[in-house]
Length: 574
Image (cartoon, rainbow, N blue to C red; front, side, top):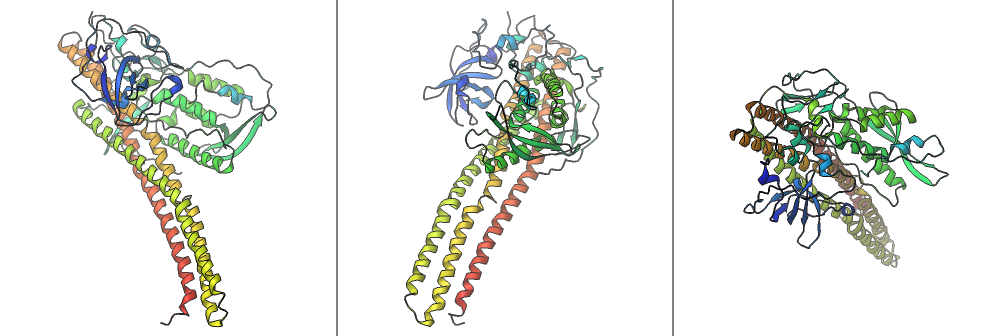
């Protein structure tokens, strides 16, 4: 029996050493491994599935980790071909087994992960807000300008079918001597290029990619809009036993507010991530906070973070037009409507690799060699930017400590010393000494004021800067998966090419795989260009605001010192 990609995908009999590319904060309760960048991990099992491997750190800690976060560091060790099926995979909490996720070639079931099963909640007495509890997910989970539309969308690759219909985006599914090719497909992206994805697209909007001066771009939304998150209110239910914060979300194109809780944002993130994470960056939500979560300062900070998050979603030409997002920002507080929209979103078949069925790229062919070189450039860029952002976060946090600690305290200590000196000078009761005594008191007040300025200043410059950079770290965290998907697709296309040379794949089948590989490359390039477009504007705004706050801060210090210096002019001859 001939296995597809045996060397790369089969269970290895030797341990492979890999080097970590990024930090990964794993969920230890679900058996995941945590590590920092540049560590060496021994891979003990590559057949977990869904893009996960099992490995062991140097300290003996074992667990699961995403394969796109590592690269091989010892190319001399290669996987030994094995013709037996891999051992049973480890079952993760909330994940399907590999046998459930992989499909045979003739199966009509879509590849994309199905919606998570929702447990039925026991009925409770209605208090006017119970619809919200039925919308729990099964697992935790500014003013911008739309870029001008680069060009008019080109025609697609000859795919024109009525909707709704089962679209496979292919002429044929690759069959290699009826072997286990499908069984060793690891990712939704690989399943897509092999023609295994089928989905009923229904009213899923077609996502066009157009060619601009900078390269492929998602076609702009015909009706761009933004969202405002406002009026956070603490509410409770079950006679005050359960408390939560509700926020008003007001889309600019409807100007009608709807009320949402943080868990609803969490549910939306889960649905968007499930649908788009193969090729589109869904930014991470702000971290949850358990203690002190109803303090006014925290509530306002959370409101600002949620507004930044939802505005970034609204800016995306593809995600902003999704039915689940439209439902989230427009559906009013009606229990029946919410449940209907929730069930519809969770039954969406165009998720994961199947989402690519709704994408129409330009008709131009893609040089896959150039695509691989471009992918390498993107990988280096995102890795370097992530490291630089991490350094700014560390330095910024140190500066905040200094502003609120050492700088404030040293100025206030100096103020106390000057005040003590002025009290000493008061012992000299001669009139000639009184102006100097008064001037020293004023100088003491000035440095006390400057100390307070340092203590408050971080809220005006360092906090906003670090908030923006932290938001981008959440976006950057999605790119290892996206870029890793493109790399796995390019590698799979090469494997199919080798099979064609061995006369195990027909020319038509090879052409289909290549067309779908080009579409993945187009999608990833469009997403990277979308990211780069807003990165330039966002970081220019971050630094402009930071420097303006720094200038105002130091000017205020200069003005305070200049005003204080006036007290000494009459005592010193010109």
